[in-house]
Length: 356
Ligand code: MRU
Image (cartoon, rainbow, N blue to C red):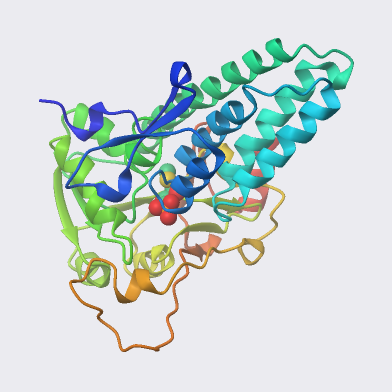
């Protein structure tokens, strides 16, 4: 039977001049793919979290930038670059925290610049075709990177372990395997009897709607809990390790991830449970010195007061605090799992070394 894991999170449908995504706002009840053709459709899909998760946003941005200049009639390199930068800035404004968005857009632009030898040669058809290849490469690399993160993460898991995760850093946030879920999928493949606990992740319920859905579809022993239940679970001894994803790791190892992650990390420290952040190098931003420099997205109050409820669940006019992410201080992180290995503290040094 076809499950959610048999669908591609993001795919280029070049023949249709479109990106095809699973509309994640409808999951788990309805599995529906939609086509994104215009800049506005791509921007909205990212902003509304129809496609979400740092790596998947990056892949969408790469395909999006290619499609938005695919039919350009710019006569010169300069005119083409101006058009490309304008589209890139527009897409980049859809969400601020996940660095993969700007990372993918910058990578696409750098590829064009290098391909045209800094403007000394310009063949529009060929540049556009090179952009298509580069965008597909970003996607293929994402799959490879997640698999490697899974292999490194697997070395930290034992048969019989109880694992906790927050939000969705799963296949639905990437192009395959996920980051935080990759070690879980590989452990399951290996026949390990693991139990995975998913925080539901208020207010947008990515843990309940997406992570629990994909892990359960894979046949993994999956248990859902409300966010405020994880401390008692950790205290009970049921959790051996925690794996989460991230949206941006600063140069000192502070890591921004879905709101509530830092609470999990703080409680994990209290009970001596290892807390791992899974981060492709595309999510590590060496130009952001510390977590305090990360731009945290603030979202609409209705996500807290009304969404998912039959009727409004808060008094009219009450103020709402709704940041989409928080920053986990580097001292709470046991290891940062990348596709090149597991980084440990002091992170300013291990991250610097990774990029050298
Ligand atoms: O707001 P979202 O759903 O895009 O937030 C997603 C997360 O916080 C993920 O943990 C993160 O992007 C890593 S995905 C591999």
